[in-house]
Image 1 (cartoon, rainbow, N blue to C red):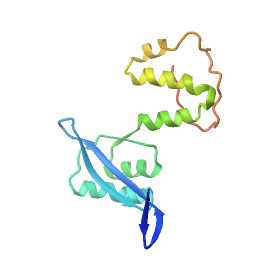
Image 2: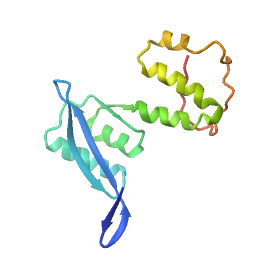
Image 3: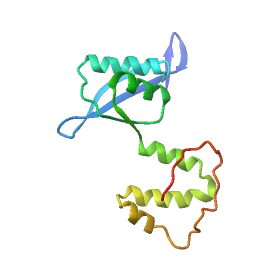
Length: 146
């Protein structure tokens, strides 16, 4: 996001924490604007939430930002899980043109809540056993449907 600081337009990070209460309802826990998404910024943000009474965090779901993951471990001592939307976005970015349709179809089936065995059976028999695409970046996310 862009913001005006001292008469100049600069990039800033806007972070929002959303939690699920005991009744299963989502609540906005906090919002902060800072210079970047560095670990120090995340640590300060999470400490402020803890000072305001945030307790009992068991799981944090987010993108795979290294600074956030480190701050979660340091401040909340909670388990971290990668957001499914970010995982799929990154996965499809590495599929290339030929593999996108294949992966998008499988993603839709999995996201529809099918059991793992049903998702495997949902792949049409016309698809080759080995996908025709190859990853563009060998350092892409390690993710496989088995």
